[in-house]
Structures are given as structure tokens and as C-alpha cells.
Length: 424
Image: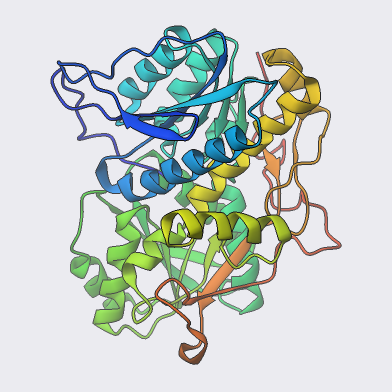
């Protein structure tokens, strides 16, 4: 998911958050002026650079990202590290695009990071990817959905664990088509008013139109909006067949809660989603059909092991952003172990040759050579029957994986015609 940066300013004396993990110990390091203290790379350590928003309306998702990458690095250090060396994690609050770029540059050029992992904002990811390319280092995108990052702004040094907006739309769209909620229907869309929401709306319009439906109304919602009553009153008057959310972060939480409070009779669905924002809305409010890259109920041995380790350390299950960080890190560990090298060109070649990746799902994925997108299964979630709910995180019913077991993983991913990528 994404973040709005239009109102976020980077101030010289504003506090900057940096978490440094050395051999399983996390400490915060900050200079007297609020800048992160410089931690020089040591020859016996491998530095992992991590960037994610920890402030703003995506802060809660960023915190899950930090928890997950911390767990992953601790596990690897306990297993002996990499290439006989221990790992040091430096995790930064990316804040906004200019700050994300400057912190990425510092992680690579001053801290000596071997790789960059993370991010949730596509605007910030674009800057991070450009820094990574200049420095000839990998950037593993864990949470940015924009199709543009995989299209005209693609980058040979950037790989995508997170799915594209068009993939989310197709995953949820399949369920909506099955339930006869697209063809011949009139839809009402609410979209986050920034790059992510605009990109998701474009993908939604394309899918709905191609399948015989119409988005008759679309409203752009400011990312700092907390009161949805003006939009809900318009929806009540429009009487749509389906209400679509192209919202992000806490917008989704507020929308779900207030939609429930208004008691509107029209079905709802989303083309973008994070399980943590549904947790914020709660079981009594949650409704509709939503797409997700992962859920803690996925029935795969590696998924169960990850959930158990996360639960043991943090006392709650991981959500999909935590999943993204964990898969990104495990991908890097696999590539370095197999190639016995930190050389970026060798790691890129390893992924581009189609190495199977354990994505904590029933089927292994692969990074596609021409745009570096991880091909993988997706899911939808709907409300779980009240009698089956076990705890405050257990109110989403995980649907069957899509594509199905006998279908190609290419089915949901953007095609070359939809999203041309040319590495320069």
C-alpha cells in the first residue's frame, strides 16, 4: 500500500528514526541534531539497509515491516549469518520521497549496505530505486503497488515482492465476476487522491469496462480525510450495485467502520488492501470482498513457521507487509547463499534465471526476468462467520488461491502490452 506525501515536510531539526540491529540486539541511534548517527560498515559484517514509513497514516504498516525484518535478521544470525559473517540491520523511517532518497544514499554510500529492502510509498520507492541503480545495489520492493514502477519507471536493480495494482484488481475482480457484481452493474468508486489511488482507479476502470461494467461515479478522497459521511450520503443517493474502495492505509479503516455505521445496503469491495487496516476496523464492521497478497491463515509449512515465530516474538500474527519484508529478506539470503557472493550482477542473474522462491504459499514463485516482478498466488478475504472467530485478528475468511493450482502464475500479472518495461 501507499502513502500521501503532499503535506509531509522534512525539517532539519525533526527527529529521525533509525533502528540498528546487531547480532539480534536493536538500539536507536540519533545524533544531537536529530540526524541518525553514522554507523560505519565493518569488514566482518554484512549491512542490510531497510527503509519504511514509520510516521504518517502508514506508520502502523511500517511498524509491522520493522518487526518482520528484525525477526528475519535475528533468525539468520542465529543460523550462522551469511558467508560466515554476521548481519547488521539498519532500519530507517523513510518519511517522504526526498528523505527516502537521501537516507537510501547514506545507507549505501556511508553505511556500506549490501542491499536495500522495504518501502510502501511508490513515490519514495522510485527515488530509492534510482539511488540503488547509481550505486549498483539491489532494492527489494516490499510494499509499493504502482504499475509504473514495473513499467516505464522499471529499474534493473529493483525487484518487486509486492504485487502491482493491476494484479490486485484482477485478483479481486475474479471473485466479483463470479458473484455477478461487475457485468451490467453500476459501480461507485472512492479513490485516494494521490499517485497510488489514481493508478489503482485507472486499473479498476480498465478491468470493469473490459468485463461489461461501469464505474458511474468516482470520488477522489484526500488522504487526511477521516470523515466519510459526505461520500456515504452521495452513495446512498446514487444507489450503486457495488461500492469500490481504491483507498489506502487508515482511509480503509475509517471507510469500513463508517460504512457499517451508516448501514448502507450496497455491497462493498476493495481493489487495494492491507490486513492490518481491517484489524483496525474490527470484526463487527468488516464487510465485503478484498484482495491480499498474503494472510496468516495461508496453509503452507513455511507460512505456518513464520506465523509461529512472529507470534512467539510479538504476541500477534504478522500481516501482509510483514510477509513482504520476510520474503524479500529470505530471497536475498537464498541468492547470496547459492551464488556465494554479494556481487549485485551475480544476484540479479540468479533471480532472472528463474530461481524458485519460497513465497510462504502453496506454490513457489519466480522473479520475472523482463520486469523483476515476483510471480505468485494471490487471495481474497471476506468476513468469517461469527461462530468461527477465535480472536480479534481472526475475522477474515481466506479464499482459495488465485490463479488456481492448474493455472499459470502469469495470469494476474501485468502483461508487456499493459505495462512495458525496458531496462536501461
